[in-house]
Each structure stands twice: as C-alpha cells, then as structure tokens.
Image (cartoon, rainbow, N blue to C red; front, top):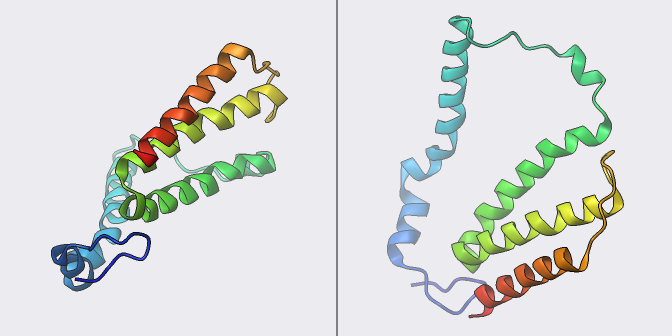
Length: 139
C-alpha cells in the first residue's frame, strides 16, 4: 500500500488498481460528452432543438463568459478535492462558498444587480455556515 500525499492514511489497493489499470477508468471521461453529443444530435434531427445562433453571443458582456470558466474550475476542483479531503468536507466548502459569494455580490451590487445590505441576520447566517464548515472539516 502506498500513502496518500495529503494524509498519512493508506490508499486501498483496489482503488490504486482501478485507477491505474482499468480501461473503463481511462475512457469513462469520454462517455458523457459522447452521450450528450448523440442526444443533442437526435433532438436536433427531430426538430426539438432550435438552431445554434452565434450572433447574440457578441452582445454578451465580458463577465458573462465567466460562468463557463467558473463551472469548469468548480468541477475540476471538486473532483480533485474529494479523494483528498472527503466528500462531506468538499460539499460543505462548496455550499458555504455558494452562500458567501452571493452575499458579497448582493452587498456591493455587482453584475448590475441592485445592492442589498449585509444585515446582522444575514451575517449571522453566513457565520453559522462558516462555523458548520469548520466543524465538518475538523471533526
């Protein structure tokens, strides 16, 4: 058994074998995009999906492209963190971040939204989330 880099607990041999030797582990990442492409092609052929229009994308504000980048970063970081810190801690950190970021966006009125003050009650709820996150991580 080899030791994980982040912690001193051993990695089960079955996980090592599956990740390094299984053809399905290496090709699993290509299956969802292929399935999505096939389903989209069938829907498009059946006339159930409107044609792709590229012109409206030019009018989109620059910050509008951040959604795709943020989603890619989120998925990548989540997949990298789960084996290192565990699923519960990863999900707890994600949920806490998903509550803290909009509170900052609301408070400063970013992305053309009307400002909404960070009240004591909202701050208390965010603090409770942060404390809960710490309890899950360090318990």
